[in-house]
Length: 149
Image (cartoon, rainbow, N blue to C red; front, side, top):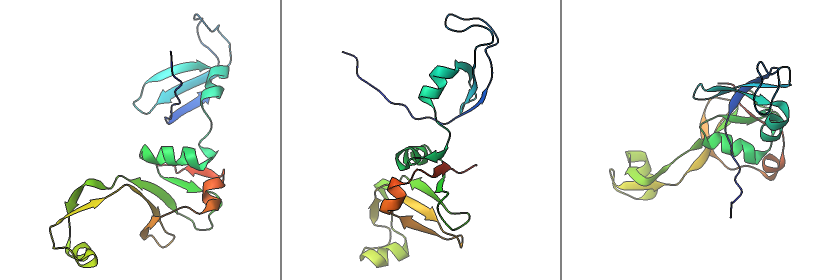
């Protein structure tokens, strides 16, 4: 029995009518010229494209987090601060050597193995960075977007 799948990928696309007949499209049919992150280009019929993709501004928190996991910066239009964004940090699940500051904070020896799980990090208005946990408003908002890179 076939299982269901959902995919998440970031693409660039612009409306463009079909340029040549194929098994499922005719010249002039509405659709999109699609370019994937690896540079691959294709054409997609409008109906198929619009079921699979939504614009990257005005997205849910869940989609924003999936984009962050793919390495993109994400932000909310509802935030007051300019230049703020969130990134996904992969952490160090296998461990990393403690520097002096970390060793002192955790009562470890400098150089001890320090394991860090993945986390979210935010760029603050003043340019500094901090670990970040979303508020309930952040989680339920649909004004997330992928920051232009």
